[in-house]
Length: 447
Image (cartoon, rainbow, N blue to C red; front, top):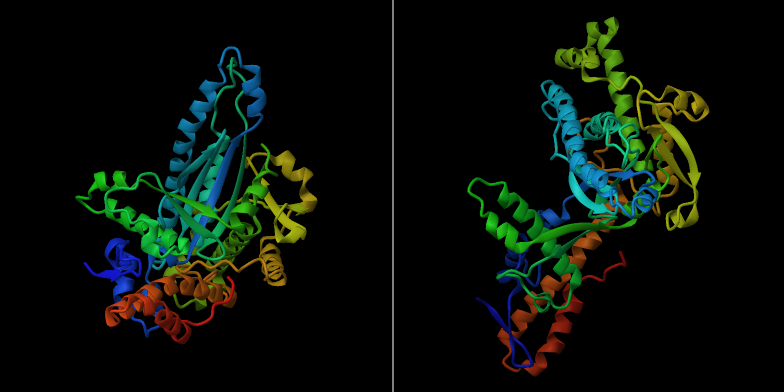
């Protein structure tokens, strides 16, 4: 194993020998006189991801627990809730996936991502996450989930008539910009590198853990995987960033009747709903059938009602809210859909705030453009419908800066190793390192 002779007489292993496979490969390819960007681009921790979050919270849970302090009978419905909510998401995804697989029979470019999974609990709130590989996933999953949760019948303590009520919200966050993934390590494990191996760069340390997290997940999916190794590492993923802050602010506005949505999620739903509706109308139109070149496309969209086409899937404007910490106080649009598809009275009372899907899509685009210092266009790399397949220039610039922040410590380590190996006088090495860095590493903007 290669080692670096330190001025203090200690030895330190190369980062490339002890970190994740991904960073180890990058380290082997980066030299002191190369940019190194090409090898870093393939890292799992730098891939563009859009994650949809779902919050399901018990309404008036605090009052329920206070009323049952002596008997403790509030515990039964809470435990029952956390047990059943997983099944609700499983059933919703099964329904959504059937629709997506049916579409894929005609559109084989459509990519179906992983199933939604439990993220974490927050008191009586269950938070789930779903990585989106296609915008249609969000539309069909949310539609199915709304129906599943409305049927989640858990009795209140001491009652066989009244059920718990829930408030639901959903939002998205994009990674690695403007949001970040943070990995926490429960157990160090036998091969875990210490912080000194990363030259004090906590950014590099965290991205190494993120890379190991995804490598470990891929490993456990492989036949004959070492599951004990998976348990030994004990990596937990968490998320930070403006998308998460906004999402939790939006979730605070939900109630048992209104399922609240973030702006970016509403934009995905609007664009997808409009695309499906327009394609369906074209597919059943006689004039269109006479001239369409792709017959399979026509066959798909003319049969779209078989996909539970969200006939009553209306969306409404909650209002422009000044959300703490969001857009520096600029009023932020919040949207909602009825928590139950059968809640016709609610929809009739809110008729004035009902939105047209196409107009909503245009509005979202314009609002994001006007606030481009804080908001970014949604980017889904595998979007076969080309609704969100373009990476915005600001996102690309911020990602390049992020790559540079990871690359610099690795390059510095490479230069340091080169200098120490070429010069026996360790005391003179720091000056040479600085000289190399000034020559080879570009000045970075604050990102």
